[in-house]
Every structure is written in structure tokens, then in C-alpha cells.
Image 1 (cartoon, rainbow, N blue to C red):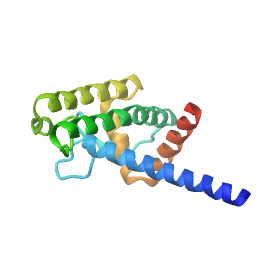
Image 2: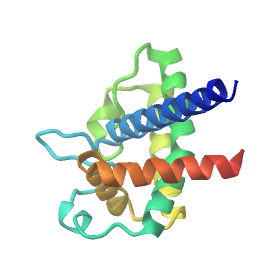
Image 3: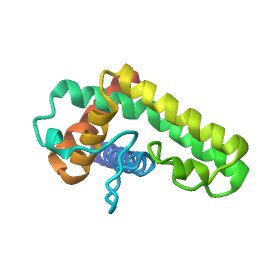
Image 4: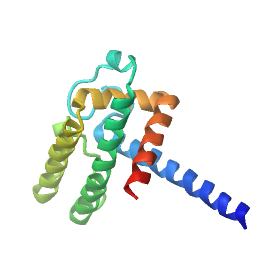
Length: 160
């Protein structure tokens, strides 16, 4: 019985890690921090040089908190726009052409999401630029990704 419970807990932890990694990846896609030829990031310009420097524990904690706060907004954005236009196009906050693909209420929802996301990141003591740099570093560095996922899990355990 104990072995079954332990394997359920391990499976649950693995599932959570996978979901969190997926959520971070989706956040990266919506934020425009995906590998592409144009090198766009969430809101402002991209500069990987600083990201190659040490990412502090405080920055990891602030990044994780931002992701935890932004992810429900992203899900809400997706669901609301889906009701209006069907499958929503990717919303990249620093690329006005992506919101140009939307009209009326859908565009207003996307614009609101971008403003709220920016406010969350800044409230959690990261610049948009640094948030983007950490996102890019995380996508290319499994150690940073692990630190972020562990911090997200730690914060979720505290909240529960």
C-alpha cells in the first residue's frame, strides 16, 4: 500500500512538472520568446548577453511568481478569444501585428492581457527585458529550467 501511494505521489509530481514546463513553454510562445528568425521577446527588445550572467535565486523566485500569476490570465485570454474568433492566433505583446489579427472585443482582451502581464512582471521586481532574458535562458538551459520549475512547485505547495 505504501509503495502504491509513493508511486502515485511520484506520478503526481512528474505530471505537475510536465504541466508546469508546458505552461512555461506556452507562456514563452505567447510572450514571443520562442526561437525565431526575428528574435522577438515579450514586450521589448532582446538582449541575451545579460541573461548569460548569473540568474539569482531572487530573480528565479520573482520569475516563478510572475509565471504563476500570468498563466491564469493567459488561459482566460485564450478561452475568451476562442469564444469570439475560434482558435486564437498567438498573441505576442511586443508585436502589434499579432493583435492586428484580432478585431473588436478580441483585440481589447489581448491588449488588456499584455498590460496586465507587464504589470505583474514589474510588480514582481523584474523588468520586462530581464523577464524575457530569463525565459530565453530557461529554454536553452535545463538547469535554469529545473530551478524555475522547482520554485514554482515550492510556491504552489505553500499556496495549498
